[in-house]
Amino acid sequence: MAQTTKRALEASLKKLLLRKPLNKITISDITEDCGVNRMTFYYHFKDIYDLVDWILMEDAAEALEGLQDFETWSGALREMLEKVQANRVLVLNVYRSVSREQVEQYLYKMLDPLLRIFVERLNIPVKEEDKQFIIDFYKYGFVGLALEWIRRDMKADPAIMAERLNTIMQGDLKRALQRFRTDGKASIETD
Image (tube, rainbow, N blue to C red; front, side, top):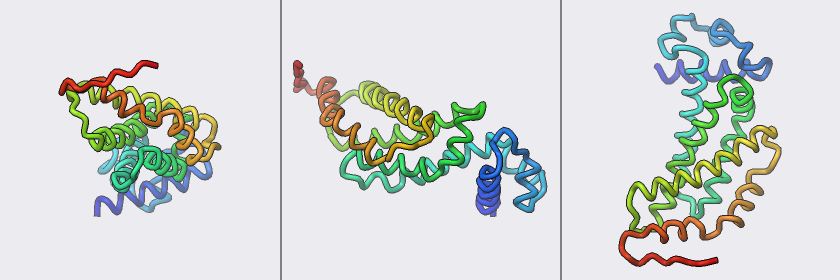
């Protein structure tokens, strides 16, 4: 029952976002549209930004469910960007409001486990802190590109973005891990 109510509140917020910006929407607007009272809203969320955060995190978890099956990280990244684009109205409203950090956290929560999947698949022995360092490096770069894409109203095709990143990054994740190997077989390449 709680999930159903949360989903109904989500649907109302998304519907309202088609008519006005996030900072002009009130809890009363959401509860009136949803047909519930304010206490029902406060039972589930402390404020509108808590609802937005829940929506973004639910979407991130849902997006990650199918990404483990991808052969390449660029295919998974394309799929992730398409999921963000499917939530275009919500993401742009949150990005343009005082809560831009929520969009960043949403992207980080999607990218960190995604990158970890592909790092683990390479099966190169690397200390955990070094793995996380490499994951963070790529994650922050990808989030920066994604935030710029969002700032530009998500006009670029996610498939083209993922392909361009793939062209730049081809083999770099593996080379980065090999530089941190713990089994003494590091292959240091010079450019």
